[in-house]
Amino acid sequence: MEENLQTGRKLRPVDLARAHGLSTQAVRNYEEAGVLPAAARTPAGYRAYTPVHALALSAFLALVPGHGHATASAVMRAVNRRAVDEAFRLIDQSHAQLLEDRRTLEAVERAVRDLASAPGTAAGAPEEAAAGHTAAGTAAGAAGAAGGRFIGPLARELGIRPATLRAWEAAGLVRPGRDPLTGYRVYDGAAVRDARLAHQLRRGGYPLEQIAPLLERVRGAGGLEPLEAALGDWRARLSARGRALLAGAAELEAYLRGPVK
Image (cartoon, rainbow, N blue to C red; front, side, top):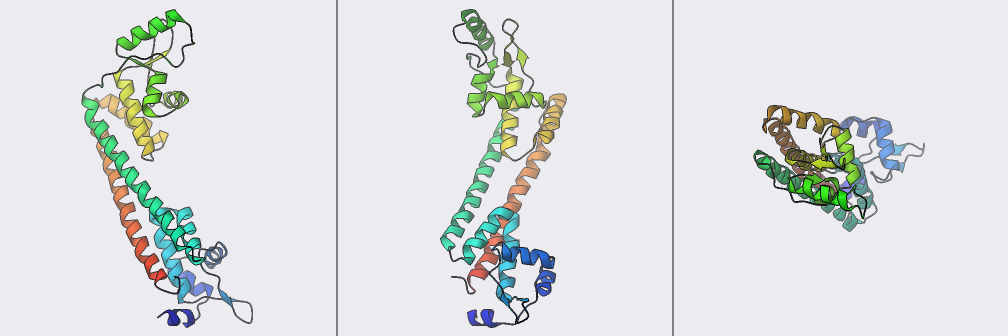
């Protein structure tokens, strides 16, 4: 079979392009990028592709939906230079990312289930307070004891920078109040909830412009219904990626069973 693949009929760039729904320039670009192995040349200087190139192109196009264009390209370049272990490492990374994304979705679903009851919050000194200001520290403690959180402790809990919380506030994702004595931001239970949801949705790949109206609907409706469709869509996209990874693996295996070892 390997001999047949290597010495099979010659394919013009247009043949390869039409069979895969691409332009001839795209085929040439993929060859130049190392996604396809180098083609032989006719005496007139034209590229002469073979069924081997068709297998390579099919493998690449099948890898893209699950891995993305950059990783799929890197996988094919590694395979074509016989660095198969490097290609497998890249594939493993995509699977690990999908697992992490599934865990993130599960965390969002847990956060949604907790929305009905406002989370308890612990007191903490504000990130914005200057060191040595006893009066400000006393006010911070009072605000914390009243159930609010300041920006520093909340940012540390979420594993983000205070500047990120400020950016989310500017985008309408969170709405902290202000301590009447110090003017520092104070996040009550609802604001902490919004910050947690925004954090999880950002990890899930949602842009700020999609998260803001979603949280606005949650506030207005006073319930979780607006999140159900988003979570269902997220879950469906993860499942589609999982199937795409399987499809890409099958096509890559077909290519590896050819002349690539």
